[in-house]
Image 1 (cartoon, rainbow, N blue to C red):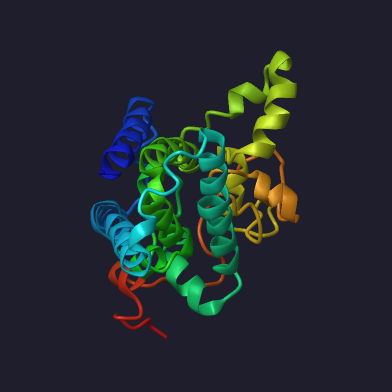
Image 2: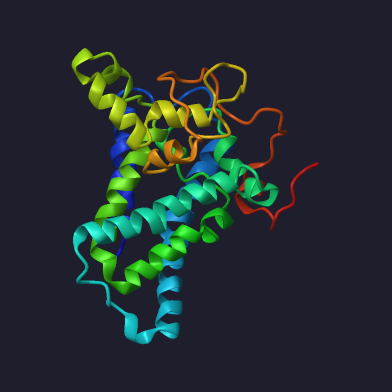
Amino acid sequence: MDFRLAILAVYLGFAALEAVTGRMRTRAITAADWRLDLVATGLTTALINPLVIACSGAICGFLAPDAAGSLRDWPLWAMVLALLVGDDLLQYAWHRASHSVPFLYTLHRAHHSAHYMSVQMMFRNNVFYYALMPSMWVSGALVYLGMGEVYVGYLAVKLSVIAGAHSSVPWDAPLYRVRALRPLMWVVERVISTPSTHHMHHGLHADDGVTHYAGNYGNLLFFWDVLFGTARITRRYPEAYGIENLSPQPWHVELTWPLARLRD
């Protein structure tokens, strides 16, 4: 089963939205940014993620050959719950650890070195960041156990939320101003990641009153941040994005470290 089609559809949809609204290209995007964004996206979606899923399934097949498809008769709600915990909660923990463990942060810093927000940088990470991501390996195991069809739908929903959270189009901003939608938006922004809550995580200046670099780690569900005390909600957006007080690195170094050495 090819999960890349779901990824491609979501990615192109938000890219088209940014293009139509005139928000795709900004002065902050350099030639090096384009190279890093496009190469990272291509490698991640076309090679690394599918390879991890396949390798995880192969390992499961070697260790437990009789378990293939054993969970295919689970009810839908149970499969979705298993994916939310095994994939999304585990990715929240990985993302949170990546902001406190130096080795993991060096793998993740490429995602924050962009001085802009856009769907084009949602996969902007070191190649080993995704290859080592525990949630990807667990997802591969769940697919092996029979959740492949549900995983495709789950992935499409998850990537839609993540793409929307990274997009330069702040789809949530006009909804906050509609009085009748205030109760709904209060719930929405505490359940899923939105542009406001995730843009705050990418802010450049910790003292700007908006940036929340050490929090708002959620990918699909922002609820994990609420549950574990790492959430901050302001309904505002940082004026600048990037990494504060860290020297820039060449794009290929951020992409392939530790194969390529960091500059001092």
